[in-house]
Length: 365
Image (cartoon, rainbow, N blue to C red; front, side):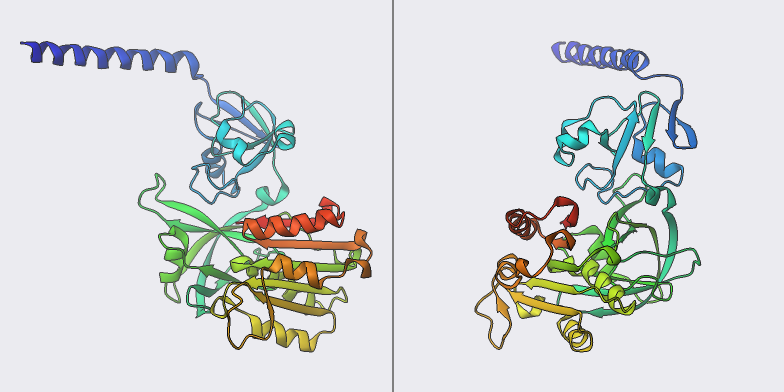
């Protein structure tokens, strides 16, 4: 008897909770469509939908590399009006200055009121394309080079930019997720682009890209990236990277040299061991051909045999090798790409040398 009574009370409790949820939904979620305005474009969505999904439904492909889980910070947008309060999870990627300017993560912003956005032109211009894998090569035991051919006349990118590859994902509501990869070749290289992908144990994107075979077709969006090559305004461009941070650095070097720019370009790159070092011979050959290009490679494992280059962490090697007194600091520009400890180390050096922040571009991963 007590068991039956308990079951009845449990069912009643569930029904009461469902009624409360229904009433709350009617009271707190607007029943009318929500208007989303972006410059001259306005569209409507259902209340409660997240902004990222709403934008993708309108073919506005803003960056997002974590499947909308709020763990990558790529889908950062500027809200001019509407949007409500920023959530704690967003503050992991948005600092106080950005909050005051209206920055939000699109994947975490639930549309409960009309909203007006200010999106960069590159987000509005980004499109979805298809590309065929035409060649692959293992650069290290776990880093693979993939070359894709794009059959689209309007596809073009600038050095230092990246694309987002659509990766099949059975656990995602959409059946796919996006992963971001920097382009590793010169601008507009015969409607092709090159990626260098490090295999990460359990990594959704890297595992899939390491397995796909040549002649297979992928879908991607882009290009993306805020960095702009202003060679005429700069006296010296310094590129510093580590690990798979090589991709955008190679893109910049290839572009500068192919365009026969007189701008001096210095590359500093760090790896742990010789087997982790790639494109070393390629850059040394470029160094012998171009007077305005120099490269310094360093290995952090100091026990490496038959290595005649620099040893130590790359930010330490850079501090010892680069002489700021030779240059006008106002015309020096830096592009940094690599793991957070490396970026932090370089930023500390540049801060000590009083290099303005607007002369530094960095990408941590």
